[in-house]
Image (cartoon, rainbow, N blue to C red; front, side, top):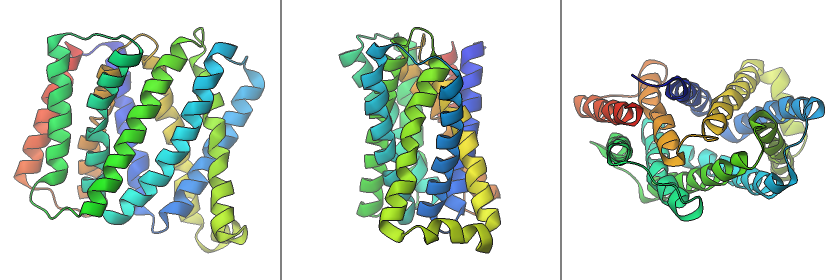
Length: 280
C-alpha cells in the first residue's frame, strides 16, 4: 500500500498532468503560460503577506529555485512547439528522476534502497519509452524536452534542500519561490507588448480562464511535492510525481485526440509498477 504521502504525491501527479494538458491544448502557449504565471504570482503574493517568511538560510534556495522555474517555463513552452503532449511531456519528465536522485546523493547526501532504485529506473525507463515508441522524434524536440528535464531536476534538488532549511514552513517557502513567476508577464510584455496580454481577455476569455485555472492547479501540484520532500527522498518523490505522464497520455488521448498504441499502454504499466516499488 502507498503511504499517505505517496498518495498525495500521486494526486499531485494527476494535477500536474492536468495543467500541462491545459497548456498544450491552448494555441498560444507563451500567452497561456504567462496567464498561468499571473495567477500563481497573485496567489503567492497574498499568501506571503499573511505568513511568516522562511528562515534566512532558505532564501538563497528560494531565489535560485524561482529563477530556474522561469527557465523551466520558457523551456517547456519551447518543447511543446516541437512535439505533442504524449511525446514532449514524457521525455521532459522521464529524464528528471534519475538526475534528481544523482543530485540528491551529491548535494544532500541521500541514500535510497535497492527497491526504490528499481522503482526510479522503471519509472524513468517507462516514461522515456512512452515518448520514443513508434514515431519520428525530431532532434530539436528531444533537445528541448531534455533541457526541460534538466531544469526540472535542478529546481527539484534546490527545493528539496531549501524546504528542509525552512523550519517546517513549506507553504511559505513555496509561496515565496512562486513570487518569481511575476517575471513571466514581464518577459511576455518585453517581447510582445502590453496589449498582447490584455486583448485576449476580450477576444479569447475561455483560453485565459483555462490558463488561470491551470496556474491554480499548478500551485497545488508542486506545493504538495515540496511538502513531501521535507521528509521523503528527493529521487523517490520526483519519480512518483513523474507518474503524471500516465495521466498525460490518457488526457492526450481523450481530450487532444492523440493516438495511444499497445506498446504505450505497456510502458504505462511499467511506470505504474515502478510507482508501486516506491510505495513499498
